[in-house]
Amino acid sequence: MDCCENCFDDEYIKQFIVDDNNKSDCDYCGSSGVFVADTSEVCQFIREGLKRAYENVDDSGVYWDSEEKAYTEGEHACDLLIDTHCIFSDAVADKRQELLDDLLSDSGPSYSDIKDGDVDDLDGGLALLVLRGKYVAPDE
Image 1 (spheres, rainbow, N blue to C red):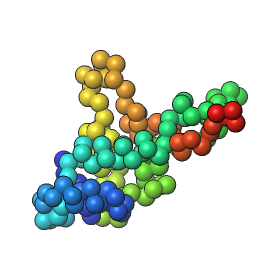
Image 2: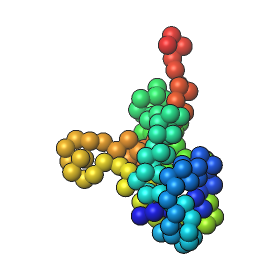
Image 3: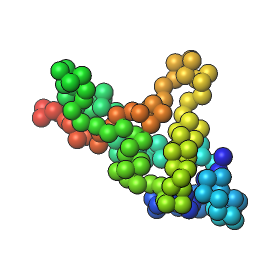
C-alpha cells in the first residue's frame, strides 16, 4: 500500500516520501498524482527515528511500581506518533488508525520471523517507550 506526502504533517516524513521520487495515487487520503511511498519503507524510516530518540522502558531504568503493577513513566509507541508528535495530517483523519496499523504491520517482522524468535521492537505500537537517556543512574 502507498501513502503520500499529504498523509503526514511531519516535515521529515514528508521529505522522505518526496525523496523517493515516485508519483501516483494515495491509498489512504485519495490524493492523485502526488509523491507516494510504500508503507513498509515509510515506517522503517519512522522506526529508525523512534529508535534514535526513545528506548523501551525495560531497558531504561524507569521504576516499576509493584503495587500498581506498571511502570511509572512511558508512552505507547502509537500514542507517541499520534498524540505527542502528531505525525498524521487531517487528510487522513478518517483513516489514521488504518494507516498506522498498516505502517506498523508492514514494517515489522513477518509472522514466520516472529515464529523463529524475531521480536517487533514496537510491539505493534503497544511498546512502552521513554526518551533515551532520560533515566540514568547517578553513577553511570
